[in-house]
Length: 511
Image (cartoon, rainbow, N blue to C red; front, side, top):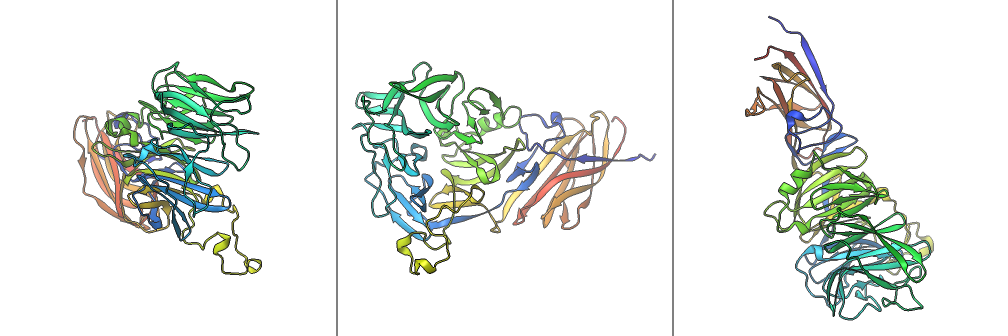
């Protein structure tokens, strides 16, 4: 008996989903296996290259911050009790006397008027004026004997303020307390934190909901303040009150101090149990039925506070970096492509922190005093803000290295992507697969295999892997069953893209 040849065009554009059983996944999703594959323009892509930026740092990196202080681009690396400033090939110790921290997440930073302001949760918050000969110094006017767990800047139309959150002061620990500074003039740091008739400083306890304040992130004209299980908005109103505070979402907060990032006027948040997107009023789960259960099943229950979220602006991706079970620092990341609402997964090299900024470690110094040429004859851009967001890089802190991501460096990476249990629209019929047409670009070689099973409770029977060498895209691969699975694997330097698979098959009987 002969059977007519059929063709299934598998064109998934919604990324990877692990929480839904593969037998129930729609045709828009990959599912079943994934390693070091992200999704861009809706297509599966192996992660890019990487390189250490600014050489080896003097201490393991606990926190990173990119700041254009004055007119010079600096990278600031924070260790357990040290701070290093790097500019092109220059490296300077700008550490004051610091109490050593135990965990990277204890550091918090913000930029007010392009001035770096930081807290290590144990000492008085600090700021740096940008002189490499002068270390960070304590914020002027900050109450004696007082520390904070997190910092945020509020940049108003006329006045700017610093916010200190989760306060430990001589009277005790006040996890729901917020302090804000007097207004700061452009280019300056506020000098007062104690409320008075002639300034705009103040404080408030957000005690209507339980739990500690974790962090605060600006959203349009407001500052959104996240507790562990609730969300507030701070709005500038002037007058005696200066700021108004109102609860927004009484049952949604941030899991950790670094679990929120701003994405084009919305926040992506890892809550205590989900991954959500919010504009402060509306709430949408982006993890449900895809990555929510996977994240919390694999997140280390002891070191979960190491989890952090960062927005890679140049690529339009949110990275949710977390420690897997048994790990103290981040060893895995969910990479969320915002435009296409698609998740990928990648391995990390024991990462403690991340930051976005401009990498210029292979350039000559931008500092005017470092120039040996006659300035009038120099055609280079010096001390100019000549960088755009499209040139910004994502940098991960791993031990004493600041690792720049998505570079052109050739890095060998083990990667794979699969789609298990395709039923071709008819789960009852047996399918006989003859060959595959893998739609791929820049792949060098791919190892391709096809598998089958009769029931979701059976083990998948895999055929032998077939090697597909560029530019060939067709591979013979035989399998027979009700549910058909396909897997693609590599372990070389090519940063490949797979946009889909055409599966040539025949429909057979029912058993």
